[in-house]
Image 1 (tube, one colour):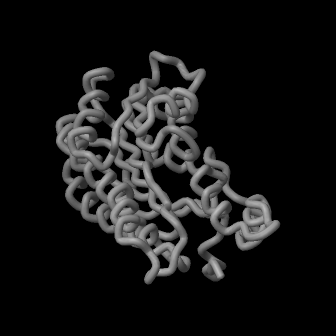
Image 2 (cartoon, one colour):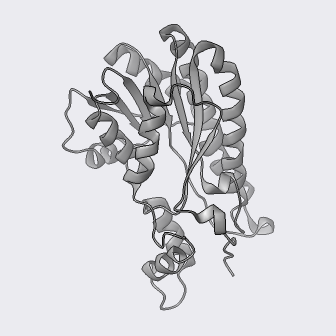
Image 3 (tube, helix red, strand yellow):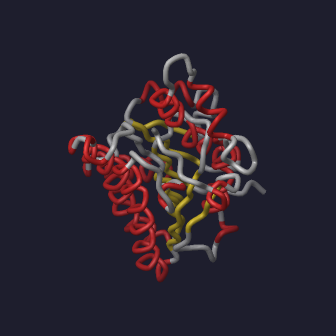
Length: 264
């Protein structure tokens, strides 16, 4: 039997990279999915070809309470409930020293990366309680467990995701609501591409940055988004029925050997 047969899932940040890989895998494994992103056109393009009976799109700003409540209610209205919530939407921001990091950028990064998942959990909890439980998965980062220079806003926000996960896991346990974080390492996504663009200098191409960074990973390559989605599938499924309040790293061994990379 499909691992998510009969489950109803919400996935935010679904228009590319890890999010769209998760939507495709969840649908493949039997779930009905409400895919959420700020831009509906990007959602439609990223998830083209999926069964329209199994997936639908919802354009929403995950930082707006009313819009988060709306996408949560949309999943219930369209599919009859919620079993799984994957809160994956996030932004990186620019690479800048702490003293040059604009307050406005800090606010933007932390609002998307912290307020977004917090609102998502807050909206989902009452429905998951009534349903007798479920799984919430939050996308953090290896930078939620470590740090690199010049990413103070992003690093702070991804550490905060761990804290809110642990608090929610304690509150949810008595209701059979499981809450966990996934911590991707270097992954071949649009977000990482923007990082490579920022770091490329002179005649150096972004691909050169990617190749150089890959050598810091014991497995000597970046993750594919589908490899992160595979762990998310486990946490979404009943196979992880006794897993809550935990951090799950998918990084090819990076954190075991990581000397943080500087941007200088």
